[in-house]
Image 1 (cartoon, rainbow, N blue to C red):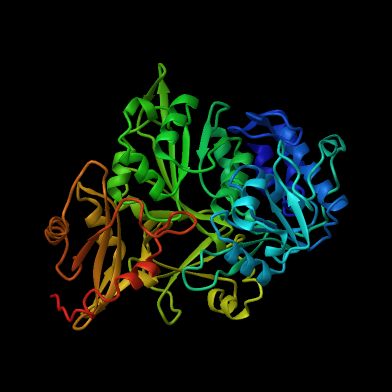
Image 2 (image 1 turned 135 degrees about the horizontal axis):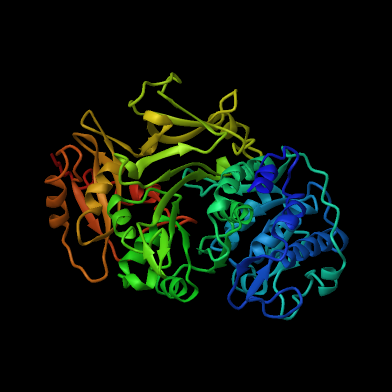
Length: 550
């Protein structure tokens, strides 16, 4: 633990030098497991030790400098299949002095072309599958230098590819970066228009290492985390960086599938599952036998709020300890609060039975600080709701080529306006109650969408619910619910409406429920529902037909 704490406190540490600092700590420890992945040497790679990962990062860095001609400050876009090569090119490019622009493989070619033109990337890392499916021709994107990331397949015409010889060339000298130099540009999901590129430094991306270091004594060599998130998202990159420091091994899935995840947990005895609410609810919807998930010690959820009912069901599976080979005690359920503009996690919460309102409570990760303020920028009293502002090492330096958005998001003294509503509680805890845009002004009342979603989610037929406000001729706005039902259950709109009316005040209850087919909820990169799309889709529920609801 002490050597990890010293690493976390190293004020000169950058992502270029991190691989060197981890080498004496991890050495030949197993760090990751993969399915059907071919390494740089062309051989199957079911498991990787840190020393092998270190060699590959150095090989990629040397290749980018010597063969691709990468110079310090060049922008390197990564747009490839969602496998762990993403992370290796991410660290290799930064070690070589580049600025990485991660792009999600779900994006279409036209979207990628706009982002590349906006940021000015000159190097693109892709692979055969994605190039064939999405790009088609090197003339389709404004890129000068193309890199093929996959091996064991024919070389694409006009592409550079790492030779196995680079593995034996030894380590390269890391680029002389400052901890505050921009090393990556992560784009927002674009829910409010064209995606913005948040500029992140090494200091930002390594801001949570202290927590990872303190967690390391509780990690055993048997612990294995299952991750099935997009590598282009900040949550995955920061989670894996923290996991390396903590010493947690990772098994990665290219795409989340509930049945495959259950089988993997059971077969590999996964002890930590890291996901977003949609993944966890789909896992529960599959109704797995308890023995299939008994190896789970810790559930970690991020990106969005996980309803109380789902939390209650998750805690039935697994156990924090093992006694005579069987799970003992309730598993730990953690909620990680973070966003692109924070470089990862800035607050975390633990779902403990003795904490009232525990599902929403979080505490800042040192040295992050939280401020709750009203619309005029004044601090609000304890227990009062206001916007949550955060200050700490992970806060973005601003948005790439977007001064106006930077001014709107960052205060002059470095506080990040998160857009989340929260209240300060005793013992330094923070309770999140929703987004500023999710406050529905209904007939003079303020309705928090999250509170209504909780009520709907408790209905036994509901698998997933999103509540949004839509225009109303009398009330200004009213809440409506968009619902996906569980696989084996049936339900009607009126049943769900009656359920809500019996549990929450009339002004809070949804005025209408729309049941949609399972899997058709519009969602972004991390499977978070796109409320902007839903507001637009149902904007005429009451206006167009001249209906008036009380």
